[in-house]
Length: 428
Image (tube, rainbow, N blue to C red):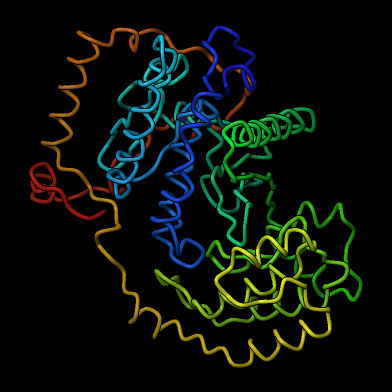
């Protein structure tokens, strides 16, 4: 649990992992059913992140998670299923860990434990308070521009040929020294280890790794990929996510276990192909043919045991023996030459879908929700009025961290549009 592992708070009741693990065998199939194309489809990638974060919050590995209201129906169904399981445990040992969705602003949705001692229940949060709710190592570190010196922390789900960033936060370098940066990195490493241990205890297949991206990371990776000799294992372990994540989609062709020394020319070949793709805009769904090629590279560069597992679970009739580097290189060259990727054609085939976009709630709806929540908390849920447990692991943050979260589109709007927004919801 995050309270004990991240904040050294022993007062929270233990989570019933053993009971829950036996009742979650349906979860991988449930997530896969909704996110089959998450490697190349931006909408399903977002749903996968929302579902996995809901699971992490339910198991108390996170204090809360934040997403847009486009995914609220799916997450609500998932949360209700998890809550029914928790309520079924004897002696109400799971009741204290039930989760709920909390609507804020015009399009934000938080998910948290109903009895969390740390979640800030205020209706209007500033950026630092939002970062505290999200267990950020550096809450409030907002970048006013892309020129502000910062590193970006990624906690990524890495269990297969799709790598999804589950937690992303910026850390302003002008507000941390070497000592504080070490503390920040240790905090994020502990959080990653907590995510992994949680999934192991739940007997679920998801695994996580942590990466730091700087302004020089992209150039550094590109220079390393041009070298004739493969890099060290230490370099690979810290950069394989960036090597396989050239495109703005979650599909990848390598992992930490990839035998990169043996297959270095093949990995360079695929990296160069992705880096040279003419990419004008992000389309909702990218090329399925490219995803299949990346899957071939991913499967064949894994250690023999992992390759056998991936081959047995694959629908293709691939051999259970990995292809030699030369043979795989020739196969991939032929597949890449035959690929035709036209972004305009992909956009015509898979246009943007309003059903998967966030909706700006009307002012009437927000006012009704705020009033009903105010009454509910003061009559039935008075524990939410208690001062939340403080998190003081970051002492300095920029002044931008004290600004309130935007709840609508920035800038001034005409009076008639303000009146219309009050009465009617519309796409963000």
